[in-house]
Image 1 (cartoon, rainbow, N blue to C red):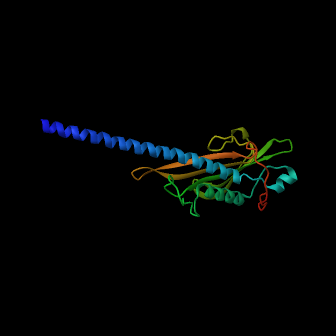
Image 2 (image 1 turned 180 degrees about the vertical axis):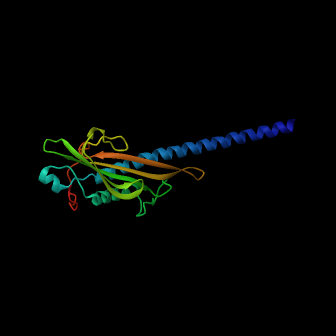
Length: 205
């Protein structure tokens, strides 16, 4: 019995130590995931803001806060996102302590809000450059129930708005990865974005 007691007394501390190490490793990885979300949140905000530009021709001629040059807007978004997260042209991180995969752009949507001279909304044109990870370039026009129009993150659409959503893998522990996504909307007017030049290559509806 004494030999068995000695074995038990030796095994229990080892088990406790191993459980403690697992707990410490798990806690550390959860902190990394939290830090990743914060950094990605900043990056997606910067990218949305970079894309939120107004067509100067439309604004200069009729004070229309709109932009139908979706390619230019997306390119600005992509360029800023790559710079903020240090991604290469395949959106794979060059150096990162938390991103365990290439970043995938799930959604990139542009809401153009058309108003009359009295400032009343007459229609909202939603253009989906990317939808569920697929390049679509599909337009949907809303002509009523404007108060009900919201982006997927719940933001109400009241003026030119950019919505984007990205996903990526994060190493959790022992090679186990979790997929994390982050989305955000930016409203040109509510964010006080200045009118900056954007090439007017697309005709306004």
